[in-house]
Length: 532
Image 1 (tube, helix red, strand yellow):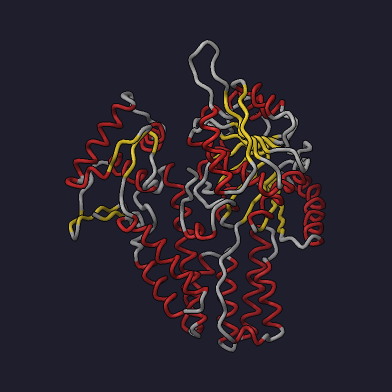
Image 2 (cartoon, rainbow, N blue to C red; image 1 turned 45 degrees about the vertical axis):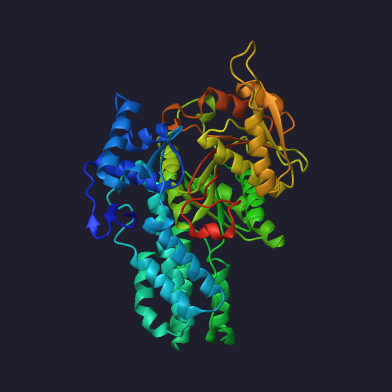
């Protein structure tokens, strides 16, 4: 049996198409496939499949749908296994089209890296041939599918860019010009496509056209998002002007670095928010983009000098930093757009007014958290001094699915700072009852010490914000997960109290699906990165 999500959801047994009836049955299978090999908690399945219309029967309704799906899969129904606290689909990677796509693109990358461009081109062509249309085409508006759709389409474009790089290295620049012009018209903010077009024009003996393509790319970037072209395009322009002989030979394709994007609407937080981003980006070998999205022209004029100063300091320290500022009456969608266009690994946002008082997230921020495929960290108290070199990074950890995102972000931050990581769990309840969290903390600590090489300590504390504040009195940062129920509850009273009373910056992290700063390089070809 084979499963497909690179297009409409599809299940095949040999040459036979397996019919799945009902939108919820198909959605249930899609969610399980997206987390293939991982246990999906029942609560998450209910939330994803039923969205804003939870069934009255709750888990009973879910069990009924699972049973129906097993029957629909016939003799392969036992692939869907019950594993506390939910369900998983136990399939071999070769049974899912996206895993085959990942394998082919990974092998294509390796072939390109060693200069075997003919093999690379063939592998990328095979990978792209697996696509039958837009990813998850029958779930274009489902909340659970938005992040995966964006991520998968990004990987599809990455494979097309790598195929073009291989074809250019094979000397087939002339035949690629038509496709490249179509692609830059469709994706005008993708700098690598412009780089391919400029190189193809130059190698085709059209130096003036190549320079005009660069000017068009620069004009598009400055007018649309207020940023200058990145280092690759600027270097390519200089090479074209100087008729650099290096442009005549085969070029080695390089994937874009991970990007940390810091977005602020508050003049007082832009500098410390950028400092957090610079710390993380430096550790991940990533580029940092700092963007200010402000309500009016007066704010734009006020914040521009700070962004200029940030860029100057970064240039003096030989660090890659891009900055931009623009006005917007829809900051949430604009932040989402920036994160998507620049293949962001982590989106840092300053906490909006009202959230720290326990209020629900406003609609703008909720849209960001739903749509962005990257990890999102809402930074509260960014203006506080949280950068003492030896101070630990503190993570309250209870082992929930969302807590792993906070654990990874905390470990990333601790490693970048060269400081320790402190995991905080709850003490045992007095007079029996709840046991303490020491066993859970020990397991997480050992895993981090082995996999990430971060010095980790564990502390037991009283439950709630008071316990975390006591355990993290000397912390440089506190990193906590955002509850899965954030659309209705906001941060909630405990997290709000933590943000208001902590003496250091607090990062509230929502898990994404893009590879983070701790992911190994090969995870760049995957659309998920397991934190468990």
